Length: 265
Image (cartoon, rainbow, N blue to C red):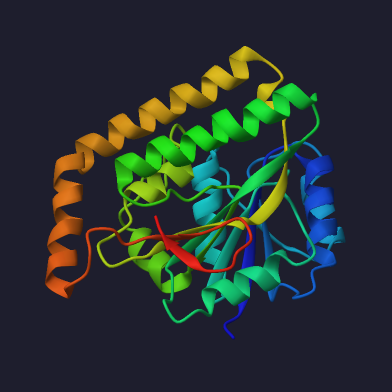
């Protein structure tokens, strides 16, 4: 199987980062490489990364996209797995990434969802079913395929080498996963697996201000991407490619929650 690099951007997230790296240390299928991107932190982020044996990359340009792109550029694996500093993958997460990326359909990107920790039960339910569920449903409808979820996805390195020239990687005011998803090219296959789960902090829901900031960045991202590659042009490009290959308009597949058989999305 291909080698797997795990990329974790971090900005003043030392405590959460330690939990993420602890979880990566007990994977049944170990990572071939773990890269922590320090995005100008003033806390113990760098020391935590080094203490856990991760490769430390510094990115002074503030923002999740600049930090993520720096880590993806530095990674040497054939498969580039992406987590946030507060992501807590289950022990079998990387084994599942390896299994899914080895399938005959050779997906370009696989993505999963998250189970929130912290806050109270109603907030966690809203976070998973409305906030995150809405992201997958609404953005998936707009794209015509599932969007990548920045806290939990894996991508083939050769796809990144193509997409890195298209995405708005130097902008700190866009959502990296939404921007990446928009620039998925015709022929690239995005697969969402509901069994590919990680734990996620519910801290974005600590305040309405923090939640609104995330929503505002989503609108900014879409506005930027709409101008650069309009929804009509994007959809037409995917349709032309599908017709050329004799395939259906959709390029994605999904699996049921038990992960038994692939179903049309």
